[in-house]
Length: 373
Image 1 (cartoon, helix red, strand yellow):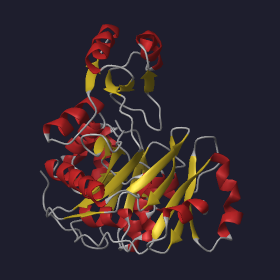
Image 2: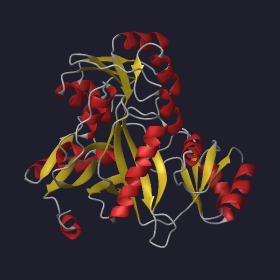
Image 3: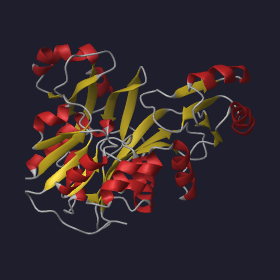
Image 4: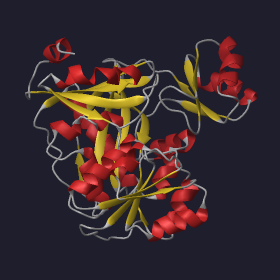
């Protein structure tokens, strides 16, 4: 699925997308001696501030994409809404990692669910919805309550509608603008966790400890590590991540979000979604691990040996959303905090402006971590 090539320091890593994830990938690449070339439609993208080269262009601009490919040794992407056709075009000209097939699966919720079901990892019951009549049939099949999710696009709670009774169907269908969807049965869960896994071109892998993820207004607010779950649940989370990465013949970093079910459930976990990229819930690895998710990603896509995923600290990562970033000076006075700002202006409601990670000694009690929030 991928050619086996190792890229030496001094090589050029192309990054599709110029947001904060691209910025942090570029910073990790520079630390290992690589140069980065950003390709994105925005003139003022945060990643541009730390890149060696950049190209401003549409993801459908074939001449610019071909020139970009010619100027890179490997191309990766910072988010999964890059058109799959763009990645496929580039793969004909240069190395693209992760493989475009992983991108195509992850950006279509129905294809994603079909893939996960085929390889035997647990997901909520679901049904495809392409029309209003389909929605009625899906309700009969899946049952209520349920969540209607657009097949493509949508994140941080966007592109979704909850149905608690059959009378909600018209409003839900309007809320998703009658786009192709899946209806997914709502399963009560205790918490969301995520596993970040790196897989190299040689098939070796490294998984980071699962984080507990807490949301506010449908946006990730905090990730806490460890996730405070029993060992069998943690082992199952790692096993699911490994199975998914191997089935995709994946190269790079991938995040798998999972729901932890109540104790009386038949299995401890359900897969919520996969993200074929570095991930917000893995930002804690920058400061709490010997090798971060961003460095592991660069190592993997460049054909280098993976590093250890061990952490030297417990951690609480918290996003700075909108005006939260204006507290940067106060945050800087806390010796436990590692502050990361993304170079974005101005702060806007719902916009991720940065994050901080609070480091604590290994074995710190969960109550103490929470008390210090």
